[in-house]
Image (cartoon, one colour):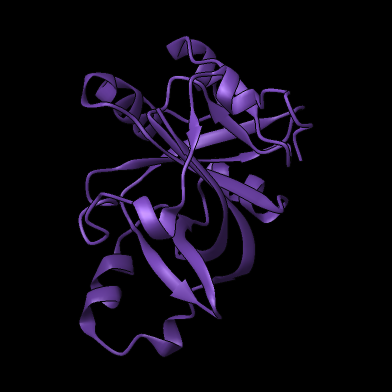
Length: 181
């Protein structure tokens, strides 16, 4: 909790806290199709990747965000070892961020540094980039890989037939904070 009269790191970076339940203005069905940035890790090391799959809604009486990460993605190890993650939106003018983060691997380079992004941290120690237009912080409630024995249609079977990054894991996070500029 930020002490009264003291500015949070997010406010100092131009963000204002908002309620996802009351003021999320994007179409939840379209939001992930437009691509977002997922980030996990800690102050010592973190990684981000572009994501195009996800969901926003309610689960277990909580406001929740669901994201998916393929098993061979570098970000997966950060998701598996983190309690929290952030999902960030960027202005259209910053689309190079999403393109770069989606085509380069953090195993090979510091992608944020290559793009000139500035990493900051929430009160929970969750990384995000100050250049983002919106940041949603989530606490992981559930994580598990998809199990092919439960695929009930041809859509996932076709998807994974020749998908080199491997089966995705699903991460369901309770939205614990949200900020936008």
